[in-house]
Length: 340
Image 1 (cartoon, helix red, strand yellow):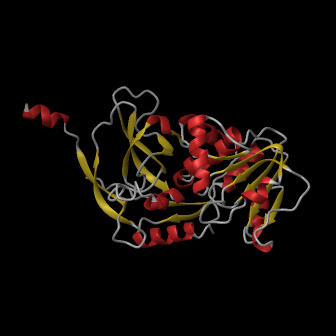
Image 2: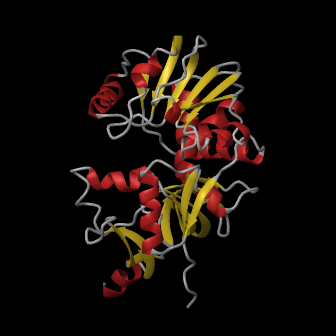
Image 3: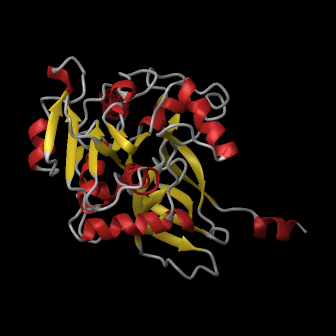
């Protein structure tokens, strides 16, 4: 009986990870943790992480009352790129050595176990660091425009926060979907980049107009708002006036009142008005769509910074993220596991 117990016991290995830790100002710290290295269960693969994306959700979880104590000691991060190092016995989609990207919990760690439905093969024409920046932000922009905005070819789109982690992908995806006019709202510092590099047809500088949106008679089919939230400027009242009659206002953040309306919609399937707040869900089909866009050069990732795996550098990166002054995305570079 003792031999059977030992046979079924998971093999563990000490790895390095960024974990939630209340003893630091950031609430995160690099530590050694135990990770399973046994063959994963059916529907999962083990991955050696090469890079992990930095997202607002990483630090916002620390302010959620029902979660902030439960996450202590657990790895930070929700998206990544890496290499498959082991598969379950019946795995038929992925194999050892595959370069993949996707979403999971605790991705700022050297080894993670991930469900196969939330990963896809990495785009061949970009680096691991660039790929790690795409799963959450890319899925958010894709689902905002395609599913909630119902954007079709010829549509006109306004992207609020066009230079940020989700907005810069929204500008490019809107063009890829065939939008006839894409207007980006960003700071004057980033306006030239949004227009010339991302391909926006017009750019509106919010910091030179008292945070007002463009005054235009031309209305929009879709407004993709990546900025409005309980701790930032609320563009929705002014933005809603810029929608066409059947236009859609899509938000990815919101105050408590907006969260309540989102929960109500999820329960009842009823949506009042033309405004929608949603939470994206990463899945393999959408990751493959993003991969196709990247390989066709319709969408290009942009890294504000590749952050070394050091406590001080990671803390500075999160401070920059909280300032909402990033251009594109930031990722943490995860060091390879030492060979024994």
